[in-house]
Each structure stands twice: as structure tokens, then as C-alpha cells.
Length: 316
Image 1 (cartoon, rainbow, N blue to C red):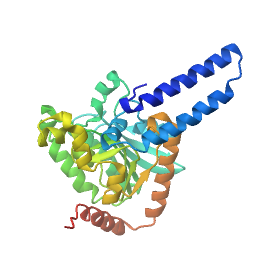
Image 2 (spheres, helix red, strand yellow):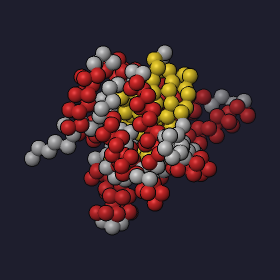
Image 3 (cartoon, rainbow, N blue to C red):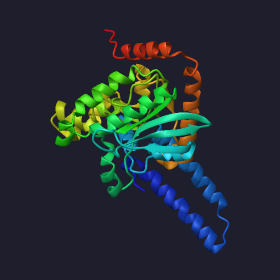
């Protein structure tokens, strides 16, 4: 499993516990007390390390190759998922997954950034960086959801929209801008969840909603730390400093009023326990759906507009 430098003491202790367990079983020796003491030490170590992470370390966790994707969460907490493809204009962008499913019997529409778990899948999914047709596909499905009065669940997990020549030729900026504009006018509930990386307009292109949730170790920012460092210091190695300056962690975003709620993750990140992460996510979605489902379309639109107008207020 991929791990970062700050996790090395945890990985080493986990390996030691595993080794002792295997030795105990193979030699039929009772080492349960030693194992229990080491597991207690491991829990203390995890709490100490993961409770004192820097912004940059949280960004690294958000980028973990095994972090759950929208399709993982769909498979774990939803039923009867039907994926829909194509924007009816150019083609199908696999960096964005869309479709319909049921959550606890409730019919919902889903849009989300989909990245891969290995090199082959990442190439197929374009590392979760959408093209214009991806955003147009997402809007096509969101309009269908509005037509049938279905709530929309949007999963954000991208470093940004794809900046290639082809994407620009097909109207990348326009596709994102139109999505932002049109999501403000959709007369159906929208819940947005930042599950990994929430990078720039690439995330905001499917990120306008009535409720904005964020996973504990995810981040949401106007630019990636590396991009910010390259602009401000002309040195991408200054990314840890820019991560602190950007106030991009879930805790900072909650304080600033950018997000409405933080969804807890297991120590070390969602990739360490898919089921626990998915259950926490499910509870948060159902709770927020219940809160906003009674609002009229006019109330939803007014509330959504005012929510985003309040962001960025500066008090000297």
C-alpha cells in the first residue's frame, strides 16, 4: 500500500504486529498480551500523528491512490445504479461518471469525478480531469434529474479540468461557466461532497449546490498547492507553504463557511476503511436530504444563491 513519510512509524508498527500474529499462529504460542499492548500503542500513535497533520500532509492523504472513488461509494451504499454516457454533442468523457441510483429507496441522480486506482485506469479516466464533454454530460443528467424531481448528489475529486489543446478547442472554460450558471437555476435539491481533491474550476464545474459537504481529509481550493507555489514563488517545491496559505483543509473551510459539514474518516484516511467511510458519507447525505427535501423550488434557488453570495466576505 502507498504511504507517506509521516506514516512510516505507523506502517512499521502495523508490520510488527502482523509478524507477531503470524508467528503466534504458526508456533501455537499465546502472545495475545503482547499483541494487545502493541495494538494499544498503535492506536495512540495513530491519534498522535493524524491529529497533528499539516495542510500539505492532508493534501497527500486526499491524493492517495487507493482513496475511494464515486463508483466505490455507489457500490457500497446505493442500489440499482444505471450509468449514463455521452454529452450528445461530442462523446463520452470517462473522467466524469453519471447516472441514477437508489439510496435507502430514494431515487437520486449522481454526477462525479472518477479517477483510477492504477496507471491503466488513470489513463482511461484521464486522472479524473474532465474535458468539456464531461461537464456537458453532467449537465445533461442534472437536467434530467430536474425534470423528474430527483435530488442530485455530486462527488468532487479532481485536481482540475483538463488543460489540453483539444479541451480548449471544444470550449473548456465555456462548459464550466455554463454549468456553474445552470446549476444555480436547477429546481431540485443538490448535495455536493468533496471526497478527495477539489481543485479549481474543474471541481466547481459540478460543485454548485444547496449543501456542500467535505470528507475529513479532503481539500477544496481555487488552485493546487503546486500551482499556487509556481505562481507565487516560481518554485513548486514551496507547495507545503502554499497549502497552509490557501486554507484548503476541511477544518479551515468549515470555519470560513465554504462547506457546511465535515464527514469523519477513519484514522489515516478513507482508503483505510471503505465501509466505515461509506457509512459516514451515507448518514450525512440522508441527513441533509431530509433537511432540504421539504423546501419549495423557489426556496431552494433563493437559498442556494444567498449561500454562495455570502462566501468571500472580508472583514477588516
